[in-house]
Image (cartoon, rainbow, N blue to C red; front, top):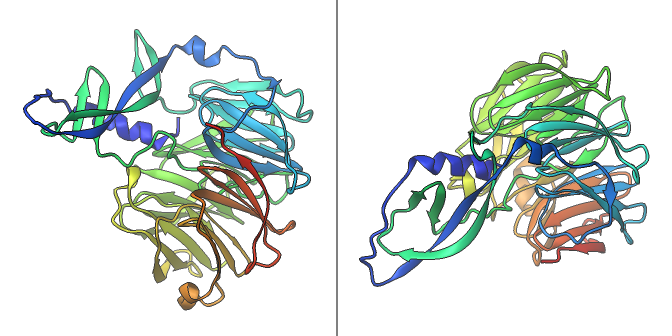
Length: 418
């Protein structure tokens, strides 16, 4: 269960108030009604490839060989043949209730199903087969003896009297005044490329990642390490508490870069079963995806939503000395999210989609190569071998040819249909 919005809303359960209709005016609130599922409801489904569906609420994206996987938040995975980025072909849909995250290695898909971890054989993508279910490996939001597991919220806009408190809890139904939070505003993700196994690539807001024959997953406070000596049956080796507000994980060579609300944690991964802490780069409380290279870490911070930040910025951090990361420069941004780096080029989701030459750390803002400002974007994957940037946003998934970063060419779009 990795939806930060839900964790945030559960915290609001401590607030309660009575509504007193003494105002002549009203204001808009978001009304969140909890959704519960019994254990049998969570696990009572069959893994299979069904007919393709329209994108309605896309989440994280992942590429593996010729295939593009697009998460439909809490519902499952769209499978797309992306052999030709100019003509992506939707092959079908794999239903996985409660699914948000995924990672693939050697034709085995690892995916969350609410509180469970699934290992699915996709060697024949048209006929996926469940290999293993690891039960209750992810933390529950909350659980009611009568209703089951809290798995989400259904939200609607309502009007309440102007003297209503900012936070309200009425019998488990939550109200939040003038909220910028949206039910589909969740982290996307990044999954790094393993050095030996055949592994897929994802976006920069990862909560699942594969490296050194291990699967790493994070929730809001824990890092779980699964050994893949038997890839069909991942074995939980260790669970590490990292503190509160953990958001993203980025593997680079023998390091793990972990983004949190308060900073970036750097771990050595020379012993993949037991990562060791090296250092912390602290920043203001904000949402925090990270992308690292040999000597630099690029961190985007954004305000609003569950992040409560007052900053919209890009931080460039010198990580030449992993035990002593140093801020080189901060660049003001609009509301940055996912990012990807290829050599000396930064691809950034901010006020649309931006591309920068980052050869000079101190002049990145002076070296913007492109800006597509008519789309609202979450995350980007850059396929270096194909010169293609895949950008996911509120209107759909876009693919751009990046052979000339000063003149991006739209190859295709898979639209969202509401």
